Length: 415
Image (cartoon, rainbow, N blue to C red; front, side, top):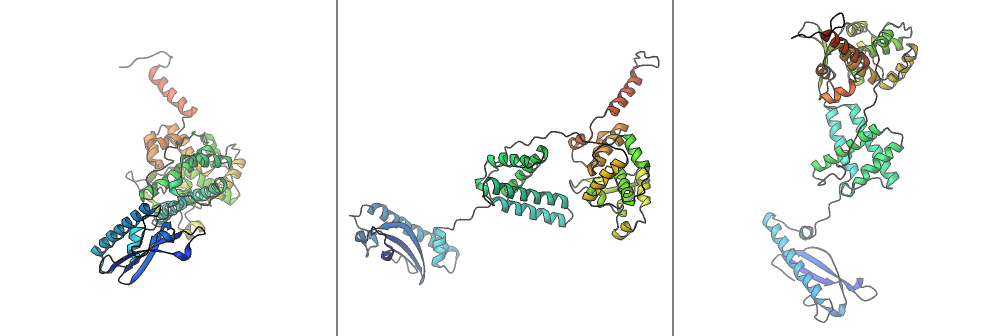
């Protein structure tokens, strides 16, 4: 049926595709200036009830009202879409009219695509020194763990974001803990997974985060630190093995600066500058938070820097200190602890914890100052490091005793 000078719409019966019961499918053909396209209506009719001249169902057909109503509405809709296209396009094809009437379903975005979006963006940040390679590696590990979880739990390699429910977070946390991952670490993985899905929301892929209500709770671990006599014992220990002596010096340097492994690994001679007090300071943006860690250098730290000024590795790589890979560093620390008689699990983190407790807070450095030195965004992060030790309690109580009581132990009141 010719609708206008350029557009024709034809409803026709494809008799060759009739089923065993004789029902044949009704097809729609669109013609625009000789260009043709079409689609199946999804409707069927027996040829005996089809009027070829009017391209409609005859009245005696049981489904005539239903079929003819569809034909009338479809023709009107196709004409409407044609007119809309004609208003903005100089050239229109039959395919354009068909696509406008029955747009192709946009494939649903998936969880792995959300990971790809998030991780690729963060990789770009890393390339501009605005993100940590360690953090990027953690995002990639999470992606691998989610993939393994989906395969084991749901027997799929990926899942549409729209299909995600709260059960995914609950089951993922359970899966991680059954893989011998600690509860705190598992919670952090789930928290990061929520961030990945939030990024997909920001991109407009989904409307809401189905696992946002999963509450991530943490148990504050008992963070091991060295006491002052243990620091001194390690510092004074004669170590004939060069690699252990270097690891010891780097570890002691971290104990007196509060620097984490990644920060001290990237330190260069250019990071040292003269502070307002005229003494040497050291500064470095902490990659994890982007917050600057600026520390006045104590004599022990200065001594260690001076010791390695001409070290071949430091000269060749423009490094401040000869820092091993994280794996070797932690392995050598365990060997060092045994040699020094320290019955604690030394890691790259314990030096930072030691700085927060034995070196600063136990010597009455305000926690606000410690926060600035450690490069934390908020005080809560510092409080996790800065556990109150018995030595700190003892020092505070001695100070209080001196204020309240005289030399004879009698209570004194001052106004």
